[in-house]
Amino acid sequence: MGLDVDIATLWAFVIAFAVFVYVVMDGFDLGLGMLFPLFPNKADRNVIMNSVAPVWDGNETWLVLGGGGLFAAFPLAYAVLMPALYTPIIAMLLGLVFRGVAFEFRWRTRRERNRWDVAFAGGSLLATLAQGVALGAILQGVQVEGRAYAGGWWDWLTPFSVLTGVALVIGYSLLGATWLVMKTTGELRERAYRLSWWLLLAMLAAITAVSAATPFLNIEYAYRWLAWPHILFTALVPAAVAGVTALLLRALANRRDYQPFFLSLTLFALAFAGLGISIWPYIVPRSITIWQAAAPENSQLFMLVGVAILVPIILAYTAWAYWVFRGKVDPEAGYH
Image 1 (tube, rainbow, N blue to C red):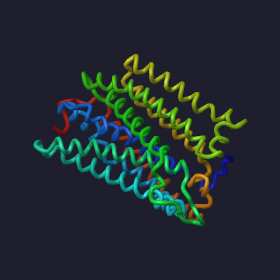
Image 2: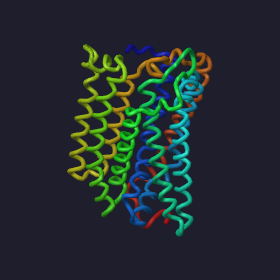
Image 3: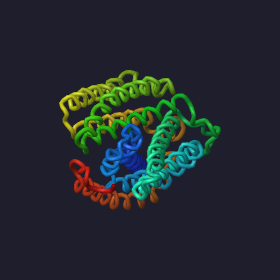
Image 4: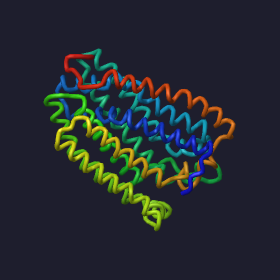
């Protein structure tokens, strides 16, 4: 589990950062879509949409950076993982397309608005479930022979990958509910509070189930998490999850509108850290390390210069957009 800092390691952290920021930026957005059927009132749905209308367009930037960075910096990993995950990746892209089109078109029609609402909710659910299934398929490992994927078309579909898919659906829904707590008022906010309680309990159950199942996927995972002295370090993660959960429960009980969302993001960060503990230094778990998959060092260095310039700019204008549109959503403002 040693960490040698070199260009390949830096690129691994760049891609991990891009994926995590995507989860932060787009997770609550997808969660709102999945919660849409629970808010049948037209005015509530308009407020929900308006809460993300100023910022949602830029969220997929980070998904593009993660996928493009994988292709450019670790081409071998890209070549192995894409054939293994064609179906969930295509499903995710179709879900994102349906969601994006529905977001724009529902404002331009009254007669067909309900159909676009279904497309928005269905696309969000499909994209989230596909992301979670893809994550589970990667974590359980893919069959590699030589430098190519050697598994079957349906290898990605297992009980574990379905479990991670359902877990991500619950997690994103929690982010969506706590986002509504932070951004809305009145009865909509009260319903979001009630949903947050149930979704938090469901997320804790999902985290427990995935954490309990992961060590059984491979003996190396069990060694990383349970063997001495590694357990002295890895035990900090579940301890931190318990601490953050206690803070989140208190924030919900005390009606601290802004705290639940950021504490929910912290739970995601801890889960992401746990994923890193399990798979490091493999980029294709148990088969290909980041150094084996890396592009030539000169190529990685050249691209790293571009990333060092562009990522701070993207972060700056994203932060500015969120700052400008901070605070509660006015039910009378925005699209209708």
